[in-house]
Amino acid sequence: MKFFLISDNTDTQMGLRLSGIEGTIAHTQSEVLNALNLAIANPDIAIVLMTTLCINTCPNIIAELKLKLQKPLIVEIPDRHGSAKIGETIDKYISEAIGIKI
Image (cartoon, rainbow, N blue to C red; front, side, top):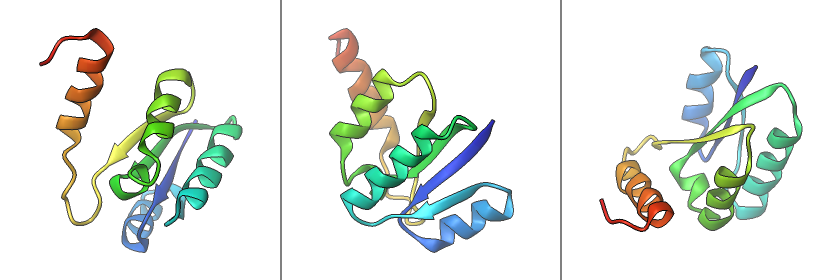
């Protein structure tokens, strides 16, 4: 099983490539969705890492895929600027799923 990265910048891609994780750069919604579809179609990829800016190009589609897909696991990682509020996003997903504000 492999990791795969979909990133908006080369710094993240190069850093993770040094640890053996292959990936691609995507800036537009169509580029992100094409890369994600290729990763989903590859049976060897178990976890897809996506930077926050990539997820923000199409958040509703990615949120739906996270809920429906058994494999691969789609994981948001902060971008190089560290401006992500991943905890708030997780709280929002949980609140929507169970109907209780956390």
